[in-house]
Image 1: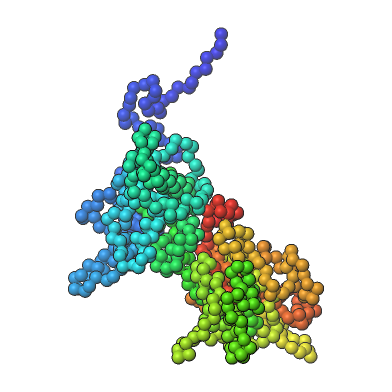
Image 2: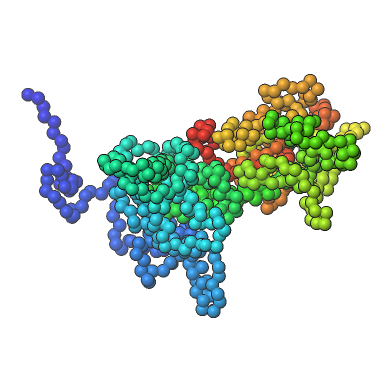
Length: 619
């Protein structure tokens, strides 16, 4: 007879509502877990609201746990924490009692005052993600005071409308039905620029028969067919855009605030640079607070980190493009001349006539005419000569807009005495011997990422004494002065095709013909100096010297991108030989200056994955 396994007896109070037993209510209570106890009411101490706010100026209790605002606030409910909005409300009340006019506050501060009690009520939690975000977007926009004092194509309202179009929520559009398919992982970064075009997302008027006219057996007239096709296309585009947003809100945010903003031109206004991250921050917090997309909450919180970073870096990119190259780099260009590639006018057949031949229908220039035409007017404009229209004037704007075009030099009006500020030389910066001990080396055009920012050396080593009877200038002493008086910004190379081919000239490092010195992978001239270590543009860092200007250095952030023409500073051959013969085995530092800036971009730069798969590695 086989043995029958029996379970050990279980205490009656250990199981609540067993499957084969009666339905029970409490008491009796279940047994306490091991090591746990129940606090008596006498021992309980109430934890009140903390006077000092928590992160993001939020109201928290004494344990640091954020309080939950009531959906329907009471009239006698007041903020007990010393938050920024509470202080402003008290200030406004005091000004009103004193008979003073209300102080003007920015639009985003007005929004912050009542933002924590704003929720989305127009969605069904059991509906699809498409329907929920459509309803929430409407609730987000309704009831707000949208400022109307901004110029065309700038300001919060403009950015909000463009952002809705970008993610596939357009005014008057209907939410697509979610298809029955395996849901993609929330961390998937797949996106495509093909469905981020404003033109494809234009709102289309309702056509006769609706989207499903043909499938329902209705006859579609020929005149209605184009509108029906356009409507179907717009609906499909919106659905794809929303799907990509759901796949990764964080990546979608990076693309919108960087490459997409450049492509659509939102960034040309400093107002938009400030509005874009603020609008997105309000919207993402609204979605999280209302539990609109709980399945995307983790990525939405990471998106808030991106927009918080953008609030600093986007304005800084614009400001940096206006102050770079700095005074030190300009002094180097003044001492050693321009190292950029000279502008070459290509003679494309059918577009430009040969310089030594006249057009068939043009009269030939006579000898008398040649005699009376000044030579300066017959020569092409000097592209490298400082002045109006020259590329030496810093026209750089964020994300690669300045320094691209060379226009004909135009002399300023002789009656106008307004001129560009004079560029300081090395002697005016206290570096009289610098051009005599050093020269230019490698010249490169590329885009690089800030790796480190190192301030001036507060404890520089003593300058080594020169040997008895030595003549000439001391390169060691010059380099010690540079280290002690200038800030060093270390730039790391970017992956090739980091921008998806949008800026071909700066998609990978290019060594210019004005370069001097050995480069990895390139033949070295026989006359070139052999004391230099071969430079590897794809792997070597660049240490840029800049003035230790507090306001200027504050614009820099690790990870930000800067593109332009980089020029290496190396010792003259005589100074290098003396260094080699000396006792010190420490290699001489290699510094660079920046002749021209054409690109400034934030650290979170991103392009669509379909444009450049290699771009994933730098996000």
